[in-house]
Image (cartoon, rainbow over all chains, first blue to last red):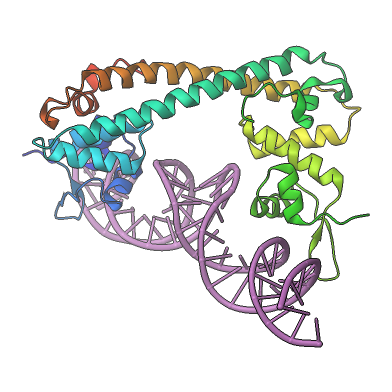
Length: 140
Length: 140
DNA sequence: TCTTGCACCTCTAGTCGCTAGAGGATGTAG
DNA sequence: CTACATCCTCTAGCGACTAGAGGTGCAAGA
């Protein structure tokens, strides 16, 4: 039983030290046992859990979604329908975000291309922002 | 001189009422004159400014970037190099975000496709999250 | 004229997911 | 034993709002 300090846990999981404490504070990670001097002592399972959380966060899952995914993981005999639903919802979000960013990219390109590097009163960047009618963004 | 109330300004610009007050509080919008009963009375120019801000926000520009763009707009004899630089930086950000979201989409699709809708212990969604080694995301 | 009811006012606090800093205790290497 | 990194708790801050409390102004219908 070697004790894993919070710094070690952070290094192994890729989650920062204050973030590990934060996850514990919001109940995403069980409070670990403490050393005599009141320092946290993690188990290998905690590292896995932190890695799981980090990966899910990198994929853009919200904390509450991760909380659900973790309770599913804790009880492997459940149906995975919830996990599937969460991932699908996230996929829809991501697809929507991509579509809107691609539209945005086109609009920014028009702005930047149109800029003749002259004075502001001829600048297309300012102009497009001021006059929404020229906007190619499909949000209306 | 018809007076434009904050509600009217909000409707015309598409910015919500509390957000208009917020923009005033952070100095993005000049404090408008007040009616006898202390209610804000906006000018048409304020509506344009709010519309400009809203559009820039929709394009993902940060408040500080918008502050710069607005000072440029206020003095049309300046060079538009700053506006151009801001738009270009934003374009780079957007392109990067699109690339990472596309990679993410692929990973989510793999997860969702792999899910056999059985129990959690066979669920690929959970599995991929737990075991980062299976991850196709190119962030390492 | 009165009253209803919406829109307005200010102020504070909450959201999300951390991050930074103060001020102190612990653990380890030389 | 001393230096120094690492740990502890606690509070406050970030961006860009949003929500709510508790109160005032104003216009229209009875």
